Image (cartoon, rainbow, N blue to C red; front, side):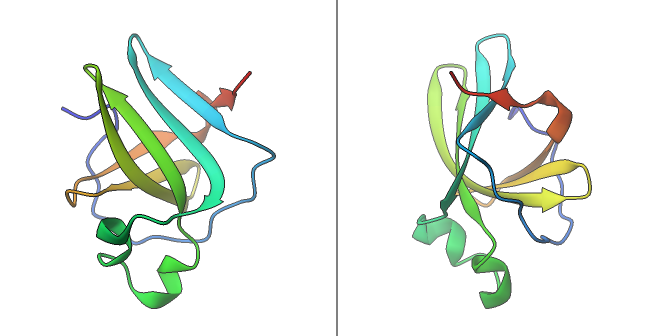
Length: 98
């Protein structure tokens, strides 16, 4: 199972981050960036207004890297992966990288 909980909720606006932030659970992690999402596989899953709000993310699960994009939903980071999987990670789990 992915690090994040599955979720099918709608996407909402994303905040601006100073740099990157990371959440870890043992060897698994999710890294969020404030750069725009450029994954065509993720962008084609979203409506045009939502595409503008998506930011880049990378998840490392069981040693495998997965490209994703993210936005904020309430107090959660809503992740959308290239394979269509989605998940939520509480924003309180993230800390600044470096």
